[in-house]
Length: 561
Image (cartoon, rainbow, N blue to C red; front, side, top):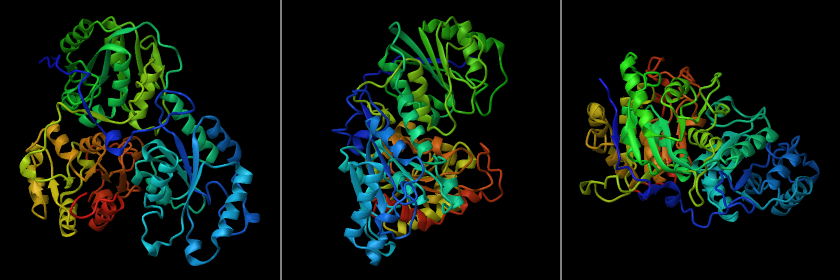
């Protein structure tokens, strides 16, 4: 049976919920005189083991030795207009191993060898002090961003241990791990982005920065652009920034999505019309290919009258089957990411290295097709304000914690027994908990909420869930659609992340996040839909107290904001 529907009532001019708005994006600077939006304003760097050789508790300037290639790498960042700050834990001050004057002498020597930094941010405390600035707490990252006149979401933090990356994530910044012999294997496994050394990290920072900006001048004006993003709600949500970029350069945008992503498509700004149709080469549980159905889809796509098509896919999906249908539909310019040889199916064949976050991966394709976000539009997830449902009044005031244990892929869902323990621990710690889930998850949400919380299983559609998430203090959730709803609303996330897919690609984007779960579990990188390991060890091992500690690290105390 044919399953395409068109909705002409999705208007690009609709108001939006935006993470940048909640995070406080006013006054953000842009790179070196350019009005164009960029990913990063600033690079924050750990000191010992990242910029200079790690000499424990060093108070002697003569022992300062830069890591290989550091000066040239930093000068490249400066030449690109990025501001630089050093963000370092120095517990030797608290322990009396060196004085503040000796530390400043070391820093002067670092600048003599590596050039001037725009700011130095130092935590002088020890772990026992339980301060908010000692990494992995995010305090230094936030302080550095303020000092540099930007926000944490526009900073990238480079460090050599897990504390550096965790501090970046908890602040909503991007973290890059440059491992050394002292870096633990589990820290490497948990990091979303790793580099072999500091120069390699700088290479990739600058490459990603440039990749979201068009390299060729715009061609003929685009009257109608067809954009494609099939698969689930989360896939559609993370493609939102790229779709807005296309909308900025086209008079009309038509989005082709699948049934599982339709509810998310309704939430995206920048879309004028929606065509819903399943694609059997994308869907995880596909129906057999029906030749007549494919002919009907081809005719429907031809009727759009698109000047250009931009086919967005995940890193493991192929755009070429649809590209063939688009050619048959008469669309003259087609852009997509493809590692496979496309022959004459693509006019713009784009390639992206493994590990790039999905929103940036899609933005880079939009840029390769000649599109960029307009001035003032941050590269964050956004939702249409006019279609996000208001929070039901019977839920009380904002400031609760949303616990979402389920997922469309059971391998990424929090095991019910673990979620039940988490709900009990959160309630005992003074948090007001709302347990959310779809209609098919009512039994799970009832079980979890019985340990502490309000059961909302099956009570909301995606737009209603978006409204509930927007008023939360934090969301505790796996790698599934509500994590991206939280990112779009700027709500901090405790990410119960099963490592079946790379964290660096699918983590909540540009929002304060703490990752929990075993990143070294045997399911790592399997892309399994159902858990392939008995007992679901990657998430069943999460201690509920870790979730409570994560909320406190995100400055979400018991009782809400």
